[in-house]
Structure formats: C-alpha cells, structure tokens
Image 1 (tube, rainbow, N blue to C red):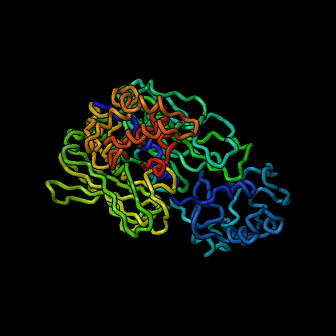
Image 2 (cartoon, helix red, strand yellow):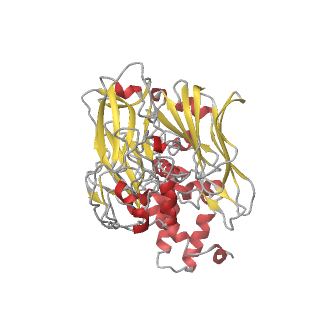
Image 3 (tube, rainbow, N blue to C red):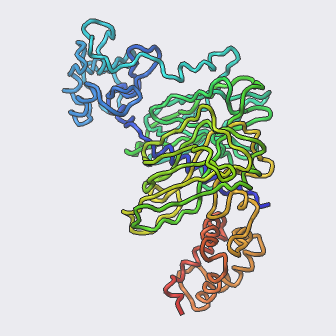
Length: 543
C-alpha cells in the first residue's frame, strides 16, 4: 500500500490560509500609541482592552471616542491628540496612557508604564459623570473565562511559548517550534488560550506530532512547507479570540499513549519590516488526567484536491466524494461531528458538505449559500451528526471566475483555489489509523482518499509508480528523456521527440496527468521532469 503522507503539508497550509483569510483588526495600531498593549479593562480585573480605539475590546468594528480622535489625527500620536480628553473624564489621553508631558514617540518607552487606563472609556467607570458614556463596554467575562472545566482541582497548565527571539524584518514569517509533553501518564487537553506578547502576531496554529521522534525544533525557524510531520491540528489562536474550551466530555489525548510532542506555528505580520521586535508568544494548554468518559477529538478533512476552473464563468462546480467503500474502510464504527467549517479562496461562491446513506440525504455538515472568504463561518451541531461506515460524504464547491482571464488551479496562494471542509469529530478511536497514514476524506479527481492510498489506476494510468523516482515505472518512463534533454533551456530535436512520447502516455493525459503533476514536485527528480516538459512549449511540439 502506498503510504499517503505527502498530502499532510496541504492540510497544514490550508488551515493556515483559513486563519489568514479571517477578519483581523489592526493590532499594529497599538504600537502607535504609548502603552498600547497595556491598557487595562475598566471593569474586568486583570484583563487587557486590546481594541483601544474600538467599542469591541478585541478590536475591529465601530470606533469609540478615542478611536475617532485617533483617526482624525491621521493615526498618529500627536501633541494635540495627547492633550485631548476623548472620553470626557477630566484626564487627557496622555495622562491615561502614561505620557502626561506629551513627549513620547514610536519606539520609545513611555514615562509611565503602570496603571494605564483607557482614553476612550470614562472613569471612574460607575461614577455619575460617566453615566451613559460607557454603554458599549461589557463587564462580563468571555465564555472561555467561564470555562468550568479549567477550574477543577486536577487541572494543570503548560505554556508553549517561543524562546525570546527577534522577529525577522520581513513582511510575512511562519515560524515553528516543537514542545515535548508530559508522558508520565495519559492526559486530556480540555482547553487552550493564546499568550500574545507582540502586535506582530497574526495567528497561531498548534499541531500534534504522530511520532515523538518525528521532528524537533528548539528555536524558531521557518516552517517547511514540504514537511509532512506534526500536522494533526489541535487548535489555534486568532486576533479577537481568547481560547477554546472543549468542556467536560471532550478533549485531545496526550501523554504516555497519546500525543507526546506538539508543534506551534506562529504567523507574524510585519508590514513595516521592523527589525528590533522581540517576542516570546505562544499558547497555554489546560490538561488533566485522562478520564474514561471523555471522548477524544480528531479533525477530519473532506474536499477535492484537484481543481481546474475555466476563466470567465459565473458558476463552476467542483465535487469531492468520500465514497461509501472508503468510509467503510476509514471508519471502524460511527463518528460524530460537532463542528464544520468551509474553506475556499477569492472565487468561492457557495459550498456544502453533505452526508448520504444508501443514496438518501442525511444531513448537511456545512451549507454556505453565500461564501465569504474573509469571514469563516462555523457550523455547530447540537446534537452531533452521526456518520456511519458506508455513508457517503460529498463536498460541493461552486466558484465564480467571471473576473479571471486564465485557468485557476488548486493551491495555497490567494489567487489559487481550494475546496476543503474541516470537521471536528469524535471519537478518534473510530478512525482506522492502523491502515492509513495521513487519514482524511478528500478526493483526488475521481479517486477517493482510499483509492489514492491503495494506488488504484486512473484512466489506464498506474500513477503511483510514475510519481516515485525509485519505482520502475518512473525510471522506464523518464530514462531516455533525461538522457536526451537537459535543463540548459534549449529544446533540441531529440528532446522534443522524447517529450512527445512522454505526453502520449496515459499518465500524462486528462485527469491522470493532473494527479501525476500534483505529486511530481515532491521529489527532486519529479521537479526536474516538470522543468524539462517546459523546455518545449506545446506549439513547438506540433508536427
């Protein structure tokens, strides 16, 4: 059996894009005012008010009085803005933010760094002079703070934070570090929260490693796209969120017989290419000794990995089918879906993930009639949706390519497309990991995940032997080609004839060619083959 690990990198990066394409507030504005990251919430103890200029304390949306004045000043800390009393409580903005003399400038340490109050919230909060001015402020804790499970006597926490380092002065950085977990016994991760120490942190992703010997990264380094290791998603943090609480009956298993190592990926957005920003952000996980009644979670992916979208079309449908025989193989018994979310890119129009049993529609796990690539919508299922072995899962994606002038294909870039459903499921023990590496429910053209893993031929092409350089099929197919062609940029007559012969092979025609070309870049020899094919454009190959 062909052990299908190569697709795990796609899983990691589609998740990354999912977070990347969400709605983000402009947290870097906090760097443009003194103590912008230290503004205390006026009525929730030990809590920061990150969205200083907004009515929403997480940021984004409607601005408050200070936010309006800040915008009027051109989003700059001017002396006039410093002297203003935006919230009308008798103290200037500078006094509240630790710059009473109005001498602070970006990059400096303010004259006062403690007891920072909000310049857009009238204080004392409950004083009669503030009546009616603070109606936008909520004094209620977020749901995560009310997460009862983390208040238990047997709860432990572990901070997974980057060692102190300097963020690279480039616009986008995806950096990774791995962490070893306690292995003295089994535990369940029942909640997590972000630990954010820099405004450059855009989002964070936490992945579990399947093997504790797979990957070790002790200091922040670029996450390698080609890596297939440590790619089981646990959770993530995004701007405007605080954490995830799974409750008393669900969790991710770690420890002696569970995950032993986690990989933290942090995406930094550094639009000004700052070279002196120090960071040690990360995530905190809450865990407790394993309990028999707790169900173990697993994130299942569905969709279509091979997309070919013609330009100028108002509606193009692509379908990925997790066929009935495949779910019979990857599910040992029924699984339960508690949450689903869709992922497409700019041309995405609508998307659904549907379940069928014996040909009859059972449920929609997602059903987004008007897809918005900048606002991920989560479909929660209470009670959970039960999926049986033998059920069929169909992912339907519809695209509008009216504004495209060239074909669009599957890929990670915003101008590429995707068709992916992400399902939070339990119990993990219901999945057949023993026989399938990188288990998912995605399709490759007409091939289901299982058919790909079992190397089922497609349209007369034994594609699995063609994509692996050590296989006889690849060697026989490319031996003459590599002898007659080189990568010097020329298209010799001998090379041209060999390319013609190759392109007449069933593996380089139609849908089979899409599958083969999708895998070839994963090896040096495969990449060289694709480069050789570019030497002689199709018009030069015409007789």
